[in-house]
Length: 392
Ligand SMILES: Cc1cc2nc3c(=O)[nH]c(=O)nc-3n(C[C@H](O)[C@H](O)[C@H](O)COP(=O)(O)OP(=O)(O)OC[C@H]3O[C@@H](n4cnc5c(N)ncnc54)[C@H](O)[C@@H]3O)c2cc1C
Image (cartoon, rainbow, N blue to C red; front, side):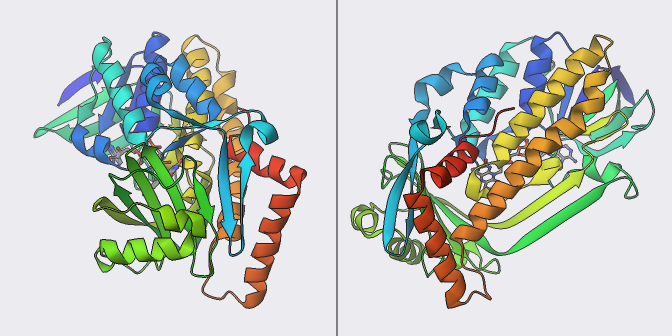
């Protein structure tokens, strides 16, 4: 068995693992990042696209903000629509800051490029059987197989950045962790197409036929979603059927100008709210999707992963300098922000989607709440300050 030592062993080379590795490396802390999948696979996962201001600041401070500043699209508002109403919420007016549209694939690419350009140890891909040992002691270690050889990494801290299906959360004994979950009775069918976006900003549409979202990645790359039964498969939705359904759900002016084309990616994602507490057990910490999942309606998943990295990197940098208090507070600090984003994502999901047991009353309540959002500066402020991201 090969055996090495590092200060922080990070399980998972998605956005949170890579960002944590980048920040720690710049602080002079040695890390190893273990990733199950090949790099090309990680870089091709089409997921988040809306970055809060705090996320953009974090990426810039981590030295990966140049391309984002050049190629990201600053959005100062979004449109919200219901059956007979479509209006814009101005983030600058209501919350004093914008969001930036820049795909998760680009964020991940920038982070891989930064690691390549540094003298940090390269991400170790293709690991199997990752197992975390001694997390409740001061001398944890991680074992795994790669290339037919068994490996062991001794470390001071293990950080689980391995997403919802990873091994880290399950390492925390069931008696210690509490998991809270809501599984929504629908999914999002997403299509990526090389067509100009229907609007220069996002459109969130509440329709009697179900929710729709018009989003984008750049001037010639659109990302659209429709609410669909979670039991459907992407193959059940040929492109023509998807475009027809989207048109019926968007506001009329957008439906008329929608440019369609062949989908270059199509997938159906289930929606859930999930939170694991605490986010630290001994020398093991959880970050991002490993600890919590939100439905994508509020565009919070990636942003929450970044705010976890913010709190954890502060704690780890202090701990590696001999000051343990930051690590003692990590879980509480991160969870305080997580719960607020969970609430907002749940609220916005509930407001915009059709549920199987909905009655005419539910639809009317949604329309009344959307009308209130339209008419009340106070309601728009509440929406906007959550959408652009609560402070760290
Ligand atoms: C379909 C979809 C759409 C989304 N849309 C949005 C959106 O619009 N806005 C938004 O903000 N968020 C969105 N999200 C959420 C967002 O993508 C996630 O919150 C974000 O990817 C979290 O990053 P992470 O690094 O914590 O986890 P992940 O991105 O899941 O990365 C975890 C990594 O760990 C690796 N791994 C797993 N198990 C192991 C193991 N045992 N050993 C080693 N490596 C392992 C995985 O291969 C993966 O690379 C979406 C998610 C999905 C699935």
